[in-house]
Image (cartoon, rainbow, N blue to C red):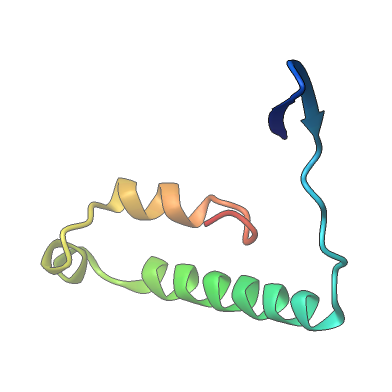
Length: 71
């Protein structure tokens, strides 16, 4: 929300929403699929590989438990 003062009066304006385009939906779906695939690949790494990248098994479990739409 944007707040401005005009002639001593406070005015609040909701931000304008741009219309959702079909391309935006495709890009979101592509991002979600990629994120899901990366999480599944991460889950397949063994403990030695995880140690090499500085992650624990608990880190991986926490990451792979997230829904695909959450970064």
